[in-house]
Length: 465
Image (cartoon, rainbow, N blue to C red; front, side, top):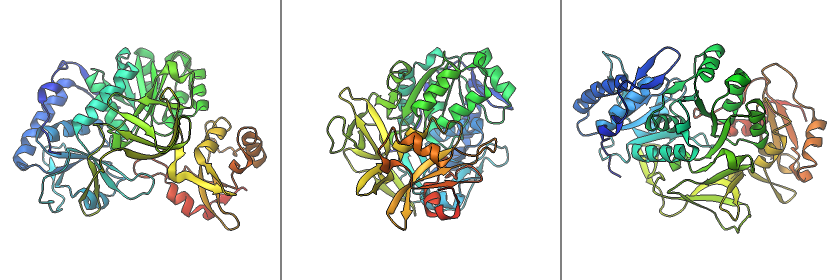
């Protein structure tokens, strides 16, 4: 996959005076962004005439957007980097970057002393991820793929109904890049909420028709910061599983808000399936139909049967960069997502968990997603997860991990948990162990729950059952 130079005219279709981006401390017009990107492009082209790969720090959305555009114009691959929480050494060991883009007058490019691969780069957008394993890898995409994917999802959700779009996540995440590209394409200012107080956030949604995209937890937390008179025009789940109980909680607080759900992976350029508001309210557990250009199926399963979800289409990644800078091409054909689910006769997908999240209890399969779904309304406002862990007597069993509540309150008791699950699921789905953490659930650099740490160290946590 050859690196392509971005066609600058595509970015100039917006009015230079249009508002492009706001943060807690600055506002930039389209003209501001493009002027800065033009200056950076000239310096990158001079410094890297034969291409290369540069890290683009992702904490500041404005600098990230400028750096991303400049890298693409200069024919240089870009890799978003969450500086401060992602190890530079781990990233350098995977993609061998040639430098770091920093938008300061005296230190635009900071060489990091890693050797060049000595061969053409694959792709021009490399997203660092670690999945559930915690081992870093670089997902090889092109910016064109990410743009097409974001536009497809935005079209399905009709984001042009909004006057602006808001997020509250680091730009190193694929979902954040997708939201930024979607907002840019649909001529919407992107409002980054990090660092803003509750009053400023409420005023933003009260004064204009703004949509919000984020993980289910972020959707719920935003709802807690807003009153009913300043609800978002749209709320879009783009991350972990948005349960029916969460959908009900959002709609109870903001009945006029349109709630959409996206399901995707970085390997799919961000989004794979979408279910919009009207359809979601009739099937709140579903994750949607494949977006245009994608096809999906359940491997080795008939209609309505649970199996691993597979995807195909032109927006799939080219492959991975692994440790040592080795490029591993994606195998041709269907891509296995690692997610378990089922597909209805109408093509609608519903997730039930990860393929590696299924454990056998008494010789029968148990998936953690079903348990989490059953507990979601009991655990409203409290962070928790269920994982399969080793057990000295039965080999494996599902374990419930409950994070400390913001108000310090105790989690529901064991009796309440059993009573809540028993009418919904067979008895083997009742967690055999329960642990309480004194802080939030541990997370990986990509923001996902660090399952391996929880499973490996579960005996070190306070056991409630």
